[in-house]
Amino acid sequence: MIKFIGKRAMSAALAAMLMLTGCASRTTTPVATEPLKHDPQLKTELKLNEVANQKFDEEKLNAEYGRYSFKMLAEIAENANKNCNVMVSPASIMMALDMVAAGAKGETLKQLNALFSSDTDPLEQQAFASEMMKRINAAQKLKFVCANAIWSDSERLGGMINSEYTQYIKKTFEAEFNSIPFNSETHKTVNKWVDEKTNHMIPELFEQPFGPNTVMVLVNAIRFEAQWAKGYNEDQIRKMKFKGTEGEKEATMLTSTEKGYFTSDKATGFIKYYQGEEYAFVAILPRDEKANANEFIKNFSYDDYQRFISSRTNSEVYTLMPEFKSDYGIKLNDLLKNLGVTDAFSESKADLTGIAEPHGGRLFVSNVFHKTHIEVDRKGTKAAAATGITLDVKGAMPMEEDKKEVICDRPYVYAIVEASTMNPIFIGTVNNVE
Image 1 (cartoon, rainbow, N blue to C red):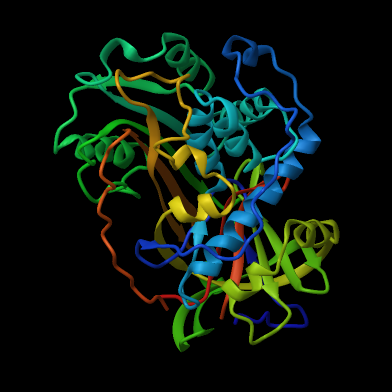
Image 2: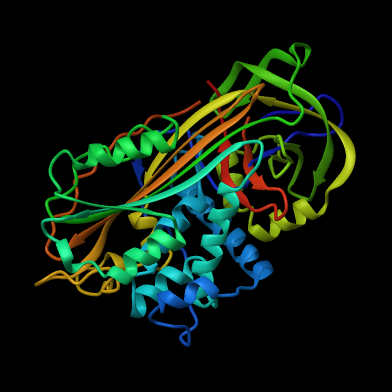
């Protein structure tokens, strides 16, 4: 646990579009969570040509996005090693799944849409995601890039791809569309694209070749690199003990006085802006000095977050936090199914005919992989996230997963947030530091 020097405790929450952890890839086990419900009156098929002019309730969808973000982090923390640093990008996951949803129909579309908002028209959700992407790419005085791409197996899908779908994805999500023959080296081609788009922060999204029946891959990548609006001088950097969940360890600590203090019944915290002040780092420190950050975030809801950020005053606050670096990877299949997205993974129920209708089969989602990386130091923050979704043709064998787990080295939550909405782009926990 990190304590402030003085009367106020420090917190770390970073909300803008990504969440991350410092453990290697692992598979999650479903937890007892009530699946998200959707309004049965919502559309079951998208008219893609209507999305460009679609209006949406910005306030409502910002709140829905926030709830989804904190729900996603809580689910991941539930399944993570309690000593891990976890981080995920709710934005990256949303962008990738929305590209799938654009070609989904029926119950498949309803379930995908309900993950983000239970009673929002799918057209509005698509417009919301597109607008968020545009804001990211228009950010000033920092490097913030959101990129999307699709690879299709030219030999097995060929001319079967719905041309309206590809035109829509290119226009709405500015996605690259690549039609190439799939082979045992195709995953390396996709990894190279992700590596370049994340400035080498995520060099390998897919650790194994694609399965024998994989015919399409949809990928989102987000890269964030920003310097602090007010940096740290040498006299603000010192060696101190970080009281992690696995014991004390010497760390490089950053100290500063900021204007922007948060306090609630569960946590205290501060906000520190990046250059341009469009995005900021928010720290959320549990009041319980013995709290594990992953345990804390499971019970820290979006409503708790709203109460927390609404408590903001411009009081000066002395802050202390460690420099740290963290990587995290997760296969999201079970987690998404547990949240109600089941039909998309079913060989018999998935309806992705808006994307393509292969001869003698149907498309379904075989795997959803998510990886993140973050570095916080005296100069600023570097973070990246990538989400990859593989679509198989009915009858495909599931991809064999590479199971490995690394236990990472006082805990807090952080988020990289969009300053105007305070919604997280990245959000994660720090239980231990290198």
